[in-house]
Structure formats: C-alpha cells, structure tokens
Image (cartoon, rainbow, N blue to C red; front, side, top):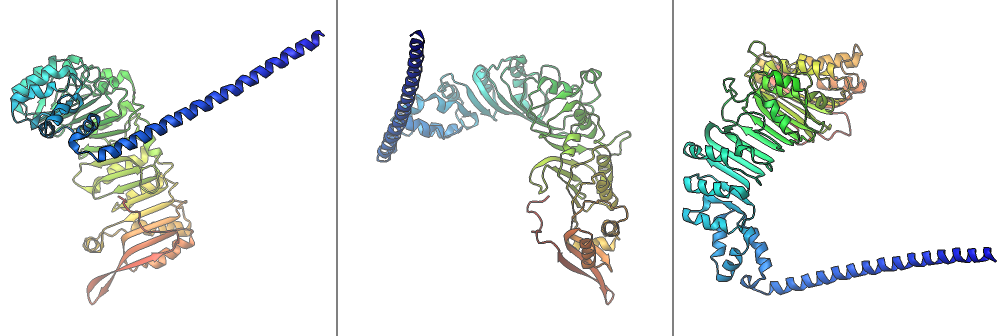
Length: 523
C-alpha cells in the first residue's frame, strides 16, 4: 500500500513538471508573437508617416525629421547659419537642437563677435573644433571652452605660436580624444595640457615637435609626427623615443617622419623590448640608424604593416645596413611572406602575405642616389631574414648577382618574375653593354642540366620585356625549361644586325594553359 502511494506521488510530480514545461513554451510563443506584432505595427506606422511626410512641404516636416536633416550639414558653420536663417520655424528648430552645433569650423565665421553665441548653441555638449585663422579672440574662446572640446584641429603661424604656448601648457582637456596641431614653421611645443588629458587617444603633430619625455605621450592609440626638416642629429629633444612606445602600449597606428632619436639611451637598453600587440601599421621616414634603433626595441604582431623610408646613403662611417638589428620585428614579417618584389631603379622592396600581390605587409624605400647600391640592401636581407615560406619573387631591373642571392636564400620559390624596361630603353642599355641575360642563362643551365639547381622547386618563369641579347632564341630556352618541368611565358626581346644597324624583335611564347597574363595592379 505504501509502495503504491509513493509511485503515485512520483508520477504526479512528473506530470506537473511536463505541464509546466508546456506552459512555458506557450508563454515563449506568445511573447514571440507579441514582438512580431509590435515590430509589424512599428513598420506600418513608419511607412504611414513616410507617406504623410512625402505630401508635406519641407517647412512642415516633423521636428525630429528636420533634426536628422540638419545633422547632415557637417562642420560648415556657414551652412548652419544659412539654415537657421531660412525661416522662423527652421530657426527655432536649429537653435534648440544642440547637436547641430557641436561640430564647428571657426574659419567660416566672418564676424568674430558671433563666435561666442554660436559656440553656446551646443548646449554644453562635447565639441569638435577646427581653427586655422588663429587670433587672440578665438584663442581665448577656445581656451575657455577647452574643458568640453573632444576633437581639436588647429593651424597656427609664428604669431599664433606665441599665444598657444601657455594655452597648451596650462589648460586641462578632460574629454579631448583627438588633437591635430599644424605649424607654419618648425617650432617646439611644450608638454600638452600639463598632462591633464586622460582621454587623448589620437595625436597628430605637423611641423612641430614635443620632447620625447616620460609622460608627454601617454595612452595613445594613434600617433603621427611629421616634420618638414630632414632628420638632424643636432635636435636635442628627440632622445627617449623608446619611452613613447612604453607609455603607449595600445598603439595601433604610428607615423614618424623626420624625427631623429639621437644618442642611445642606456636606460632604454635596460627596459628591454616593448610589446605593441595591437599595432596595425607603422610608417617610419627616418635616418637608417633611427629606424634600426626603433625596430630593435619593439615587438609587433605578424599582421602589422611596416612602411619604411630610410634616409641614408651608406657613406657615413659605421653606417650599417638597417636590416641587421637584433630583436627585429621584420624577422617575423619576412618569414610570413608569400611573395616579394624588388624594384631596382626605385630602390623599393615590397612583401606580401599572398602570391598575387593583393595583401601588402611590408614596404621599404631608400634615399640612395645610385640604384647599383641595392646590393647593400639585398645582401643583409638574404643573410639575416631568410624567407622560408616565399613562393614568388619578382625583380625589376635588379643585377644578376643580387637575384641569385635572393634565390639562394629562398629555396621554396615556385615562380620567378623578371621584368625589365621596354624596347626603346633596352636599346639604350644595350649600347652601354647592359642586358640582363646572365640570370636567365644561369637558370637555364642549372635547371635544365640539373647541376646544383638554383631553385629546385621553380615551376614558372616569367620574362617580361627581357632583352636576351644576340643569338639567344626565347623559344628554344622556353622549350628547354619546359622539359625540366618549368612552365612559363616569355615576352622577350632579341636583337639582330641588318646592314650594319641594330634591330630589335619581340617574341611571345605561352607554354601553360593556366597562365592569364600579368596580374593587374602588380608593382
């Protein structure tokens, strides 16, 4: 009897639990239906309002619609004032809508006495201010309103610089997140806002410098410093640039042009490598030694893009190659390259994370007056940064020995593109004894005959506007390479002599069905 009662109790509990689950599902279904009905009603109401508004004149549109329209004006104060003077209703809406006046270009205000009243229309909300025609009135007003300026873009001349020195140094900017300062001439500015800028994340300095001292740069995500002067070791303010990176570990974008870092700081040596895990791009246009020093002290993610321009002629004593720094983040970049481009005449090198030159991750150019010195660039690259995953190499008018150096350092290459000048330029090179046949002859000799293959995995050889000299048949060479399991296409130029004059001829040859011509947009 007791056993039967217990069984009935358990059965009753299971039945209640199942009933509750069914009711819960019904409640969820009702809630879903109500949300769908509410969304449908809102959509129908919005559609009806839109039909109604299309029948109204612009002057009679609802206030919220006019506010959305006014927001599209942008930062043009002239347009804002014109809108507010169109009619009495528009003026009433414009003057009572503070967000319309939070983005202001003060240069468009002709009457200076209107500046205070226009800025007050923002109602105390954060401001975005641009000011080029700097004068005492606007300077004073901006200083008073600085506590709520969120985005500030200013350009000053020598006269204005005398006024903004104290203003930048003593004022506080609690909500400022973006600051751009451009000077007409190179000047030195004091530390910003006495260090009271906790929200500053983006800083652009053009033609002006600020000492690289601890605390001057803090918490930035984007830093850009550009100078009209070439790097000069006599500037005594650029000494602790490594501390800038240490104070800004969340940097995402960096642009440094013309900022030298001077003598090595022993304290920076003791700090070790600075990690920048969020860095997306870094653009450096500095002396070779400065770039070498910066890259020696930072660690970047493999996805970061480096764009480097080296100011050097490799003539100064002890001026080593910029690619020989320890702890260099370029080592990881080079190891991830799938394609690599060397442009001899322009002294440029490019690295890509794919075979088709679509995703650039590295770019370097050099301020050298003689492109024959490119071997000073290629040799250390091949020595210190072996590209173990490289699949494609493109060279544009690069000396044969440098091409061979790159091929030896990257045995995984499956495709080699050799590009030269057009026929008229090659004719001029030929008269000076310059014709790039050596590398092709060596490839044919080593690949076809199997004597110490230069690149054993080579499967495609592309010759674009390559002059093969006298007595060399492109068709014969292509056929020989094809027998060695190397496909390719050649757009080669040869030469013959006719009645004492030289005549160029062009030969096109295609030995693979997959070939579709040179990739558009190829460097």
